[in-house]
Image (cartoon, one colour):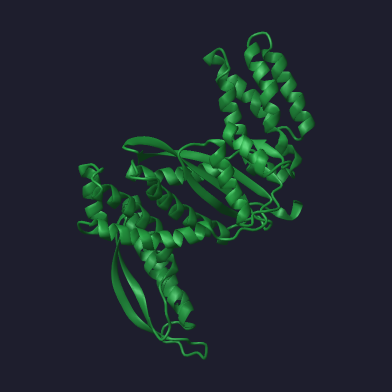
Length: 387
C-alpha cells in the first residue's frame, strides 16, 4: 500500500479517538483492521494495488463484507479477496480464535440448560441466532483440533520457567467446583517469552502438577536453569521430582503477602512490607541477608512469631541474586504470569461458570495461544547477552 494511504488511515484513527475518545475505539479498531488486511493482501500478492511487478503471485479481487462481534461492539470489516493465490488475513484469524472459544463456552451453557436468561441473550447476540447442540459440538470439534495441536507442539531449551495456577468455577458431577488452571511460561535463550503449556484439573495436588510438568518435558522442554513460582505444597513436590537440582525462586510478592498474615498489629503491616522491600532491593545476596538480619532483630521482641517465619521463609526469595542484575527484577516474582492471569480473568468472567472442564480448557487455551504468538514475534523480554 502506498505510504500516503497508510498515513491517511492513521490520520482517520487519530481523528476518531480525538473526537469521540474511547467511544470511538470500535471505529478506530475497525479502520486499523481494514487497513492492516489490505497491507497483508498486498504482501501475499507480492504487489501493491495497480502495481506492475514480476514478483506478483495473484490479483486483488475486491472485498467481502464481514461483521465481527467484539467486546467493543460490532465491527464492519471489508475482508480483502484474492484471485490466483489463497489468502485469509492472519490478524483476523488470530483475533477470532478466543472469540470463538468464548462464544462456544456460552453456547454450551445455553444448550445444556445450565445458563441464566442473560447467558441465553448473550449467546443469541454473539452467535446471531439460536444454537443447537449439533452446531456447538461441530464448532467445538474444529476449534479443539487447532488448540490441541498448539498445546502439544514441540518445545525446546528454556532457561527460565515461571509456574502458577488460577481457579475457575466449573460444573462437575452435578455441583459447582473450583477448577485449577495450571500455567507455565518460559523465557527462551533469545530472551522471548513463550506460553509453554496449560492444564485443567480439579485441584493443585502434586499428582496433577507432576503430570503437567512431565508433559512439558515429554514435549521437549530442556535446559531449565531457574524456576519461579509460589510456595504451594503440591507444586513444590512435583517441581523437585521433575526438575531436581534446578534453583527455585519463591515469588517475593507472595512472600510479602504471607509475611503480613504473621504481623500481630495491622498498623505494623506497612512498615514490615517496607522493610522487606529493602531486602529485595539489596545490590547482592550478602547485603540482602544482612538486611534480613536487621529486620529479624527489629521485630524480635514485638513480633516473635513473625521473625521465626521470616528466618524460615525469606531465604527462599533470595535465589534470584544468583542471576545477572538485569534479569532479577523480571524473575523475582511471578508477575509476568499474574498479568496473563488477569487477561484470562477478563475473558472468563463473561462466562462466569463453565459447563465442564473441556470448555474451560478451550477458552483458556485460545487466549494463551494468541498471547504466546504475540510474545514470540514481539519485543525481546530479556536481553540474554549477560546470561
